[in-house]
Image (cartoon, rainbow, N blue to C red; front, side, top):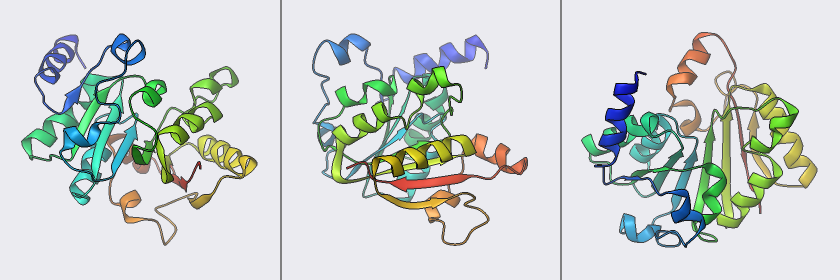
Length: 223
């Protein structure tokens, strides 16, 4: 993507009512204005669902279309990417989808205890090198952050093309004695995969499928 296009999208994001771009200081140094008050923004008390590393926002938008009685927040540090999802939500008048530009490691400062019902992690960087373990979105530190913001029965969904990420996460969950609700090594080959997993596809997922890569999925609880 050219720098001119990025700048154009950054400027347009600033005009979108469904995009929030707080500074790090507004998150870390003071209480974030919407922490514990996201229901006020959505103007309802429907369950709040996060997509972490939402990219272009295909999953956030796809889930919001399917489930109008839930509120979806796509989170990514790259605003030029989720511009597409935010613009689609405005064009289609999808009021239960919004986007938040921030670092994922700050989510415990953006949401109050028990404010979130569900989390989706879609095709994250598996961070295979050992020294990158701290950046893996299902490592122990991140699971602790999810535990802080999820309701007691809250759910986490991991959808990935990385067999390493799938195996790493399953091993960690079993080692910690956490509940694995569902696990599948190839959601498009095995029957019984949840519809939301196989009927919503991201841009990169389509590329993986064209190459014949299996798509894996885990649904689990951290409480």
